[in-house]
Length: 297
Image (cartoon, rainbow, N blue to C red; front, side, top):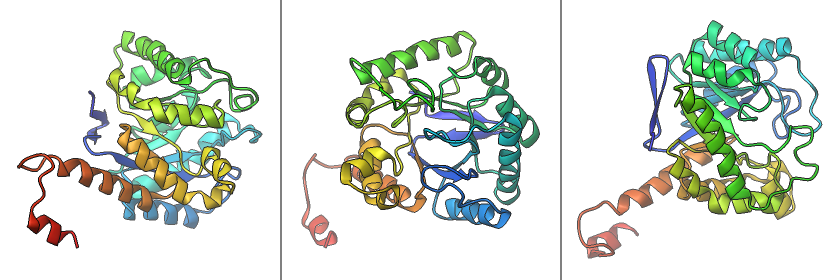
């Protein structure tokens, strides 16, 4: 199982799950669109992600929600560059991820701002040049599954077996990258991207099988419709549900949680890790001492 990737001279270590904080510099993202438009707002968000324990900052400049406005390559680059530059200024060693499906955008930012993680919602299906570029640059690549495109993905998604079919997608795309000698891969099942509510929960229930592919697993489930539609609310009401699903994702093998709410996700990681590490203590399995009982009060 790959637990470390390299990004420039730094190492991404997933031996303990990492929280990826979202910085959307878009005017129309589904939850926080328009919240971080000024330089002061972007700086404030960067500080908050890091101070709350985020280990990666993911910058999005092109909303992938259905019906979002089309953004040109030039405009996407123009939104990404200032945000990445500010992260480099204040936290030069924190890994930066850019949320783009375009190879030219990835190349421009990577060339000008230094090595980044490329977070591709299409898994290379929306720009055939993407695989060649990330293999050449040898930078970490998040391969997400999507059925269709952001414009069409939620019109009528159909699967016979969503867990199996997403796995087959991963296997085929991994084989192409490995044939090019590239193994800097992170897998993302793509919750909410071409999946019904039922598909999303089937995927969550079965996603531990993707650990067999030997690559780190990213889950991006934060405040999505699979939470608030089930519970009868809005994205603003979905923090508690998000924390529940993040916790379940960790138990299912998630190595990275991509979230809006960093503090709560970091706490979920700490709680799950404490539970896992408790089983590593010396002594008989299940044995509880009087001291442990007293100390738990």
